[in-house]
Image (cartoon, rainbow, N blue to C red; front, side):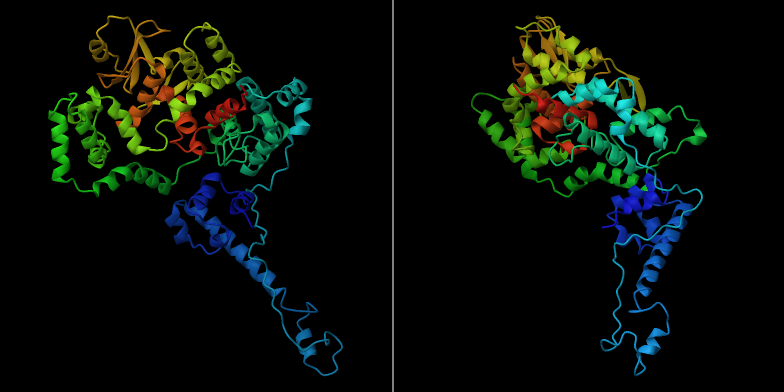
Length: 517
């Protein structure tokens, strides 16, 4: 079947125009039926782009019609053959009664596009296998990647750098999506150890897929030195912006359709004004389950955590209800972290040793130190975001500082409630307060706004509860730990589609899976 993506790409159309068709499930056959009004409706706002596309459609349909008519004649291109067939004694094509078989061209035959001077022809093929051995250190890189089981971040970075250098020297700073996809596939074919082993993917997608991936990121960095008039800007279509805005309101809009019953309010009021005791805790749990839909409607309206705790105070003094709420949201995934972490923590530590910065941090831990803390530190360092966006402003964050968005230690005997209230404004998302020595705390508390909620004496139980707080209270992850939490959500809890996370997260997850204990 004809690929509309490749068809338009060869015609010189930009990726942002092509992606609009793909986002609207428009294939090659549907494309040939579009009018300029149709194009405007799906989000192509540029008049010039619509007109060029119309010319392409007209040419493609014309080529198809021409191909159709060329099959009308059975024995000759000469139009007179038809009259000859009607004459008795005609020697040509008389082996059967006169029938005209019209053979329409295949609906998926690609007609040639009318190429303008400013439309690039299909680019020549770049071969990494031919390029890499001639580069400085290329043979060493080939041998190291072919002999390794777990690829280090330094090896991956070096491979991408060499690959993009060769790609740009051969095809320029704006290679086509087809070129980048071919290179990504060649990389994983040459070096199976670098393959993205996320289930459901071919394996090359972390290098390049639909405008993202390590190759694309490196290309974008390379283009930064270009003069402004040489840069090609990719703009989001109006339709994409509208879809994004609608999706952000979907959950709230759906919840608003469910009416609040007086019975729900009565149950919530009873829980709110009845402190838990040994005799009524079961009733609290039963009513908590009964009012789940009511509570989600309130929380999905985006109140502050303080407002939620004010209306549902049992979430603070019966913190096990946080786990119950998450279980109601994700019944099959609730216990995944606790059940899987024991094995995965050692894989994370070993995979992290392939990163020089992570290795230095791991080596600071003694053999008898907390292995859970070592693994969490390795994960946070390996998936560190050096630049984060906070309210539209870019700020830098070191690996050490990013850990403070996860756990902060305070000495034993410290007033926990006072420490929670005195937290710095930068720590807006939930984090843990560890009471006691940094490597061996005696108790953990989740700081929600400026409220301290007990999380037990085990670091893993505390991390489990901290993660669930983001869902229970409907709050974002800390930007400094976004990759860290996405790894846990996608590959441990499995409450996030792993195909949607960043390539660096999938790449590290592949390294973790490759570790054999």
